[in-house]
Length: 381
Ligand SMILES: Nc1ncnc2c1ncn2[C@@H]1O[C@H](COP(=O)(O)OS(=O)(=O)O)[C@@H](OP(=O)(O)O)[C@H]1O
Image (cartoon, rainbow, N blue to C red):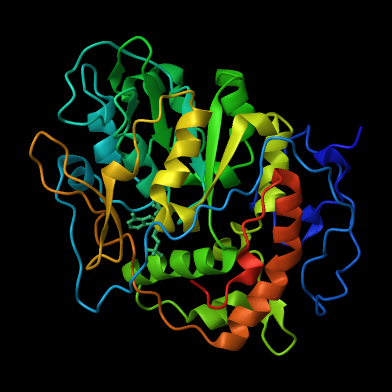
C-alpha cells in the first residue's frame, strides 16, 4: 500500500530536523525530492508524490459565526476567572507551577470549582500542538465540559520531564471520576521527535489533537512572543532568511521550522493512525469556536455540551470568550499574551514565506484530507 511512508519527504530539508535529535529509528527513509518548479533556489524541496487522501477528514465550512475585530491599541482584557488567571498563558509552565501541581495530594490544574473527588489518571487525550496555534483557547473551551478535567499548566512530560517517570506525570493530573476524560496540552510535543514513540508506549489508544494555523501567521506570532520577552532580538525579516538576496529561507529557525506541519506529522503517523488524530483549524477556532468544539467533542466521544451558548464575541479583546458560568464568576477571555498585536512585516517577506510553505501545506492537506485554505488568505492574519 501507499501510506505516508511512500511520501517523498521534505525532511531532507537542511536544518529541518531538531538539532541533535536524530529521527526515530522507525522513521521512513528520506528521499530528496526535486524542487517544486514554483520554488526559487534554496527553498525547500516540494512534495512530488502525493499520499493517498485520508479517510477521516473533510473540510466542513462553518463560517462567520464570530466576526473578528482588531484589538484597539492599549485595549486588553485580562483574565478574570480562576482558570484563566492561574496560567500565564504562555507556552511554558514554570517549574514552580509544575511542582505545585505535582505535589502529593495536589489538585492538579483542574478548575477550582470542581470538587476534588476521584483518582488521578494518565491522560486519555492530549493537545500536542502547535505552538501559537490556539491551544490555550481550545483547552479552556474543552474544560467547560463537565466530563473533561485538564491540567492548567503545560506538563512538558514527553519532551522535558520524561525522565521523571509516569508516576510523576500521573500526579500532575487532576482527579477524575469514572468516565471523565483527563487531558493536558503541551504544544511542543508536536515537534518533539521522541514524543510519538513515548506517548504510544504510555497508551497506544491516546487521542491526539493538533490545532494548526497558517504557518506564516504562526511564525509571526511565535516571533512576537519572543520579542515580548527579548526586545533586543533582530527583526523578523532578518531572522527569516539565511540569505535574503538569494531569497534563502532559514528553515532551521524554530519559528519557521515548526510550521512545516507535513514533516512533523509524518513522524506521528509512524505510530498513530490518522483516525486517532484530530486537526483543529486555529482560524475557525476564532471565527466559529462552537463549530470546532463540536468536532472536538465528537472526536473525544463526548456529548456536545459546549456549544454556541458558551461563547460570546468580545469586541474589545477581538476574540471569542467563554461566557460566565452559572456560578457567578466573570466572563473568561484569555489573557493579554493571547491575541497580541503583531509587528508589521515586509509584504515581500510574507510573500516569500507563503511560497516557501505552499508545497508543505499542500502535502499536509493531502495527508490529513483537510484543506485549511491558507493559500487563499490575503493578509498574514
Ligand atoms: N479565544 C481566543 N482568545 C485569544 N486568543 C485566541 C483565541 N482563540 C485563538 N487564539 C489564538 O491563540 C494564539 C495563541 O496560541 P496558543 O495558546 O497555542 O499559544 S502557546 O503556544 O500556548 O503560547 C493567539 O495568537 P496571537 O494572536 O499571535 O497572540 C491567538 O490568535
